[in-house]
Amino acid sequence: MGDWCSVRIRVDGTEMNPQSGSDFAFDTVTTSSGPYVGASMQRSLVVGPGTHFVNVDERIVGSGVTFRLDDWQLTTTESKNGA
Image (cartoon, rainbow, N blue to C red; front, side):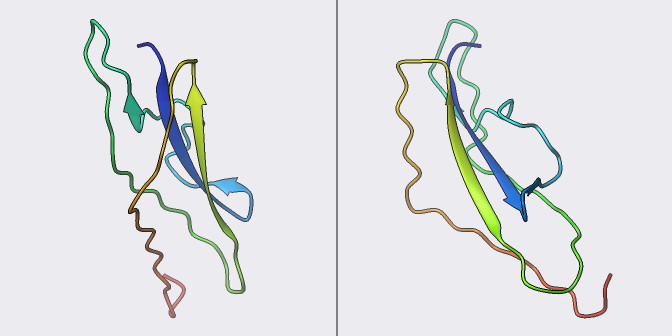
């Protein structure tokens, strides 16, 4: 597949589902087998009440690639009834 840029989202250190580590190709360099581009992602994780820390991690897999996240949005949803 070549070189790619990956993104993962963690809550309190736990990767949200589906957990793909650095295997999720958010964007790639075009190769003979074509580009692999997600360019968006949706993840979920149920957590209990309280304060939580959300981290968005970017990673380059391979070499010779630069990665820039620009004009992005992260949305979280709170459920008051515990569902």
